[in-house]
Length: 251
Image (cartoon, rainbow, N blue to C red; front, side, top):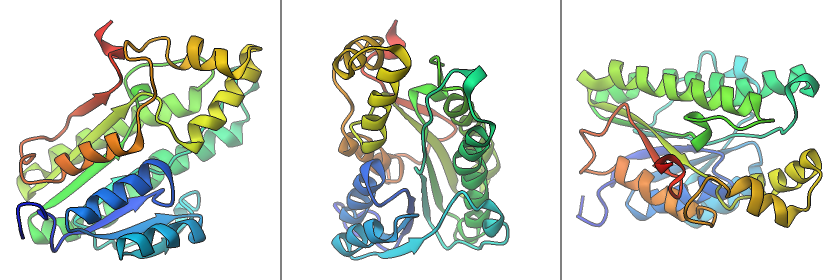
């Protein structure tokens, strides 16, 4: 293990690793020496990233949570990143959409943590990083399922931190504002429809209105914080939520 490759010998699993934040995390962790398992429903997209980082593909549909009940996961580092978004007023929100978001963004992270902890405990070292959101700490209208799921993820992360503390396992959340990903690009179109405004107006008047820094977060900025949280200087960082929100919470 060298100073610039502190994760040599560590095995990392990154969900939603085929694109966006997940792909950026896979690249960054591999660059620090980790062997990366790129988990994604889109096997072809995951394969592209896995080839780039000399890792492997795990084609998995995290909506099928029953299939994860008896999973055993050899992961020293688990990055729970996969997520979806649906924008709609509560009274029009499809119940199945609400349930699906909870399955993918709450049940699946719980089951993956549950599957990985025995391996982490056996080695006396583990890092769980949950890609939450500014919406894990505050709410916005028309995102009832997403806000609910991210708040739940915050709770799961804290309990994991408390249970894992004596066994060398840390657990933290990263809470970015809007990140420049395909998921957010779709949100812009959805928000334009809900609010009856143009997509340019959505960016200015909805997405960035609470931020002091008027731009979106870049995926590599989130990945950089993932690297710090999984690195040698973050052993005392656990049970916390790290905002990358352009000053949203400074108000």
